[in-house]
Image (cartoon, rainbow, N blue to C red; front, top):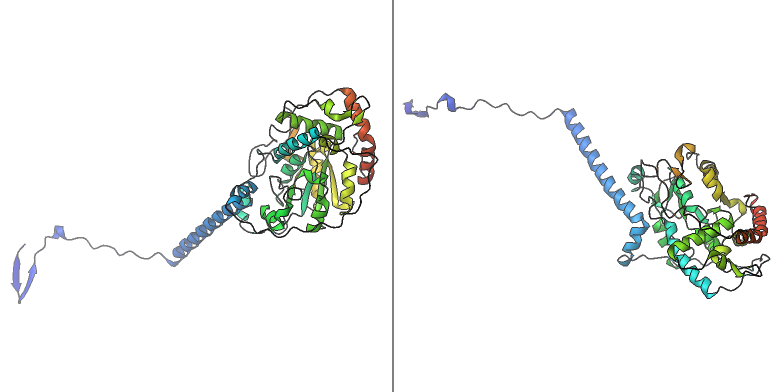
Length: 394
């Protein structure tokens, strides 16, 4: 490389091998490509925002998480509504004796055991589609409530109903109208999942049916609330109730000894809740002071096992829903002896109720079973008359 002068100007000799070839200039993408990229980016942002928002909403709607966070979160509950006037209710021809200390102990145990009705194994997480939409909509007070009865099949009914896309239900039992009424309707509504227009908000707490204050309290919330009662042969129901308590306390007295106040005289102990719950006509009288019979649907616990699609058809009609849940949603599990869902909500796998359901009942003295049937017969007949439906328990 040298330096030369030419016309007073200086220049450098640069070897051609050191010269870079001319670089092509990058051209901006054509306008259609830029628009497509912008649209895709915007859609990604919207999807990400919706996903995160729906996750947060789902977590807030989960009762379990709400209860866990209750220590650090203050809920401003509205004052509890005052119950309506409660006149003297007509009594059925039987004398309820005072609850004995043994019965009181049993009721405390049964209250703790009733938490089992919340079925921890039941899926409480919404499906991916419902999760996507849970960020929209709003929380509403329930338009329909499964109010009873304990050990009648309420958990099975709720899980079957949650398959319907227009039903949004709380998985755990809120126990608002019997245990937490003082927390107010705002607290109760906050437990509910978000719903869109056309969807129904539901919950189930089977102890409502036997709670004296529940009818007036639900009526004060809304006189249009639809009520569903799952009933079962009261003798079988009582044995199932006892079986659940026995699983918690293996040392409790026998079913036979708890059934009678005086076995020699054949006097049934109606203070024992396992017996008292099955006197359906007595409890129904309280509800009919606040709701017309046409606003209540009575589901057969036996038919819920033998013909789940048929009973679900009646329930869907009662709720004003399209009959989407049909025979194709069920299969019969011979091991458990119960129908199961082919696909539960939020899952592509079959779903059966957990091991706490369908326990083997202990062998009960036939004489005791017969005496219970004789005891329940007049109350069953009255219940048939009140509901206009013969459940065939006799």
